[in-house]
Structure formats: C-alpha cells, structure tokens
Image (cartoon, rainbow, N blue to C red; front, side, top):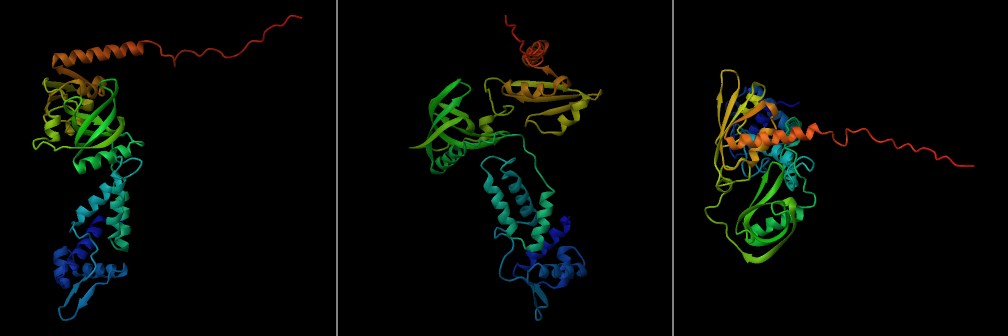
Amino acid sequence: MASIDRIHRLLKLIELLQSGRWYNSWQLAELAGVSRQTVFRDLATLQETGIHVLYDERRQGYSLPGRRFLPSTEFTIDEALALVVLCHELGDPNSGVPFQQSAANAAMKIMSNLPGRLREDAGELITAISLRLDPNNPLDESQPIYLTVVRAMGEGRKVRLHYRSLFEQDNICTLVSPYRLHFHRRSWYLIGRSSLHREVRTFNIGRILDAEIVDSTYQVPKRFSLDRHFGDAWNMIREPDQRDEVIIRFQPQVATNVAEVRWHKTQRTVWNDDGTLDFHVSVEGLREIVWWVLGYGEQAEVLEPPELRAEMKRRITSMQQTYATKSAATKPAKSKRKTKRKTKH
C-alpha cells in the first residue's frame, strides 16, 4: 500500500510547483522537509504520471504553469483526502446517509483532479479508511419528500404535510415553516413551526406521507438554533418543564467505555476507588435516557433521581414478567400428522 507520507509529499510538491513561482531543488527540499535526492526522485515520478514539470535554465528552477491539479478552492492535502474519505463513506448507497449519494460523486471529482499514480495511491489509502455509521432508515420511498422540503427551504415557502404521527396515533395535516433538516443517528428530521400545534415541532421524514409547497412564505426567527431548540434533551425529545440531575453508576466492566465517550454536553464523570464510575448529567426529560441505561443491563444502576430509579425498576419488573412466561415460539409445536380414519366395510 502507498505510504501516506509519500502521497502528502508529492501533493505538496504539486502545490508548490503550480503556485506560479519557480523553485530550485534546494528550496523544494527545504520546503518539503526531504533531501535533494528525494526531490529529484519525486520530480521523476511526476513526469512518469504525465505531469510535465518545466525547468527554466535562466531561473534555475522548476514550475508547473497552466493546469491546476488540485481544486481552485486551494484545499490543503489533508483537507482534500479528508473530504474524499468522508464523501465516499457518507455517499455510500448501502451504508451512508440517505439522499447523500451526490457526496460520492463529489469524492470522485476530487479524485479525478489528481494525476495518475497519485490517484491510484490515494485510492488505496481511502479503501483502508472507513466510517461505520449507526444502522439507519434507508428512507427508500422518501427522497421526493426530502427534495420537496429542500426546495421549500431554498425558496422560503411553507409546506403542507400529511404526516403519520406516533404522538397523536393518527394521520394529521399541518402547514409547516421548515426551519432545519437534521440527520440524527438513524433518520432525517424536519424541524419547523407547525400551524396545527402552534409551536416548533420535529417531523420524521420517513413518516411524511405527502408534502406540498404552498405560496405562503416564512422567515426563520433570528434567535432560532438547533442547539437552543433541543436544549439539554438527552437526544431530541426535550421536556423544558422537567430538568433532572441524573447520576448513574457503571460497573468496572463498562466504566472505561462510558467515560471515553462524550454522550452529553453537561456530563461529568467521577471515578470511585472500587473501579466503578459515577456518571452525572443534567437533562430536560427522562424518557430518552431510560433506553440508554437499559442498554447496559446489570452493569448500570440509577442512583438519582428517585423518579428515574422507580421507572427503571418498573421496566425491569415488566421484562421479568415477559421472560417468565413461555413465549409461543418456545412451546412445543402441535403434531401435524394426520391419522387415517377407519372406514367401515
């Protein structure tokens, strides 16, 4: 596999040579942090890949006039490689973020700006770097809805939504001023002011049955931001009238894993002498954090507040009852063998 240092060095050399200045071998070696012998080797490599480096006898220097091999936005080498990796992974139609296939095309365009051998080397490097996103809703049937909302936001117009609401347990119709599109963990969400609810609400794109742009216009309030909207919710469900100081004790088996992650902007961790970890967090609403704690099973114990501890006990008791009863799948199947009926002669 190609060395990342070699790729960086060659791309840095291209940046220098196409800057419009003429550099001699000593200057190139100093700026690249390598020996003159390495510079001459790299110049030969560029020539082999079809990049015709010019040498001016009078100036005693090298240059690359004309065509630019890196985008005109002057990405640094690290920026270009980072963009290619991110665009390639996020635009993957199978495991990336829904509706972002154009990102994969952007990655290919950036790659195409690199010359032959560098393109191949960068391709090898990119295949060695991968991102694994949480499982998400592919939203296979929702792309027209997504594009309609994007167009409405671009034009500053409201959208009439027919929505399958889990909160109302019914299909609803409402006029929405779309403030933001937000991808969170598993799906895309539209955040905007709903005429039906007379407040800013969150709509899962996958549950929008139909979206129609109307003539009515809107403006996003200057003070609106997603950070202010979600406040100190554990994830996305904020209960502004309920703020709780939560303390969860994690056993040594999972304590380090919990401490390594920034789960919430208010979190604070305290290590105990026995290797356990006390996780402190201030949240507006307890509904979402219940599921997170349940995911750690017996390795997590809620210490505060009493309401959350009681809710955990109720959930655990309900789970015990579920598993105490034999499910239909574990009951012995009834024999399907048919007995022959005796016939009288």
